[in-house]
Length: 593
Ligand SMILES: Nc1nc2c(ncn2[C@@H]2O[C@H](COP(=O)(O)OP(=O)(O)OP(=O)(O)O)[C@@H](O)[C@H]2O)c(=O)[nH]1
Ligand SMILES: [Mg+2]
Image (cartoon, rainbow, N blue to C red; front, side, top):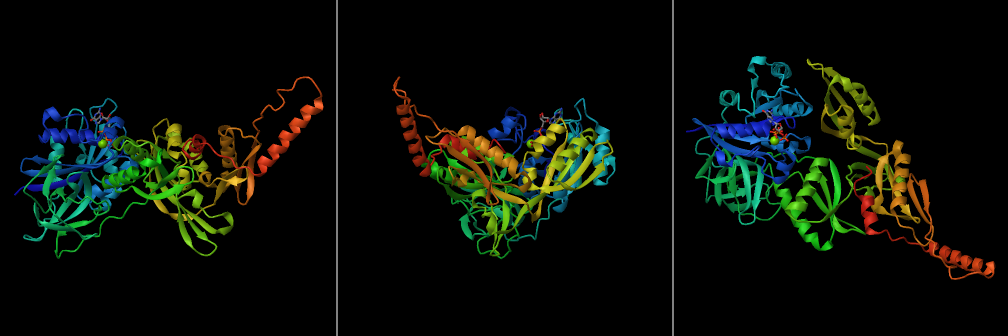
């Protein structure tokens, strides 16, 4: 029987995971030379264009008498749910640290996740071919972090392949074989991902924990009790490749034939129909971090958008959405994302893979509001934020941030943290002189361009990671925009009380610039806390009513102008300003926040 090793590669973004995976695939002869290309596991066009991994990718390799199931993972914080699910399917990880960079913020976060899962950690420094590599120094840094001897830290180059054989040897030696359950047990496994095809429906990617799965078995998904027959079982090589059976300890897939969305979920247990083994606890669903509304440019596309979101959710279980409607934009969806890059990627995929033209509103975070009547509600759309007088308390999520930076950028970073309401700062020094800063700040402030500013003030050298903390009381207010005295709900926003004036002026100014002049003077106002904070008048479009007069008595001219003025007064009294769609879109879409 073949020995199995299941492991994942984890690291900070860009530290060379997918490139190292290339060399492992090459060395084990998994991918024929003619099919090899850089970061071959990054299959999506978007991943290749941006040079980042978005989805985890499992792949089975054979190395001597060993079966090696590797799962490559993304490095960006927005995709850490992929990492956590990958970790649930393996016994060990390669913790990779770029020898030209050293330990970065995501190194610490992914390490903490791997430890929590009880994974064995194989520390490795990467890119040792690079001229700027500081191999011994970074080895020592990583060893210090793990509390192990630097001699146990391996060194590889994903570019030249140096050190890859030693790494494979260390993987089989240090990472334990999976526990294979009782012989003859009924089959059971935990689902960590999916694929979907129109013809075959959902294929579940699973880690088999007990027994043997075979084609033709009657199975169920425990959470929904959905019954199906295994249409095919197989392994990821990385393509879905059928095999006779999949036994305990292995990683593979089962084609279910199920096509209905919402039937299969990650963390669910797949087992024998009428089986007796209990279901696993499953994974905690990640909390959405930002929300934005997505509307089809043409309402005809609404069903297609609904279907596309459902389809995307199958391969991206962290995406959430619910239908909503906005007067001007029609019907659309309020969607939850794990971060701004996640949002950007989902929108880009909707546009490309489903050919949709979309309007996407400015992302916002969620607040928990306790009303005067004692109700506690989660508000993730500013226009649903209750009026000032109805709120007893507002709470907002906080985040614990880790920043690793060269010491030269320390003072602008401290200033930045102050401007973003950070608290509880602590600083530690790395052996190479870089600093690790930890602090806590409102998620609202983290999402207010903090990462971009951090990159700016550190000339790109500081790295950031964060985790969500429970909600705390928030000093925020709803800011409304009034056009000709009428509130425009879709323009509402929630802002820090201390920034309310600045925000009010900004939004009024923006609308003043965008809105075309009307036949009468139009007031543009921002209102918060029950009063007008900022106001501007948009002067009237002046129709030339006296142009045809020439010479003659000036009183005639004045009479006509007076008549015009009276008419406008009347108009203004009944005024309702139609905001053109393009102005509306510019107001609700990103750009000023
Ligand atoms: N010199 C050198 N460059 C490398 C090596 N490995 C990776 N790179 C480069 O580093 C960059 C990032 O490599 P990836 O393999 O995509 O990194 P990753 O960790 O998979 O990135 P994410 O999946 O986005 O987190 C690419 O430009 C690679 O060409 C290496 O061993 N040596
Ligand atoms: Mg990658």
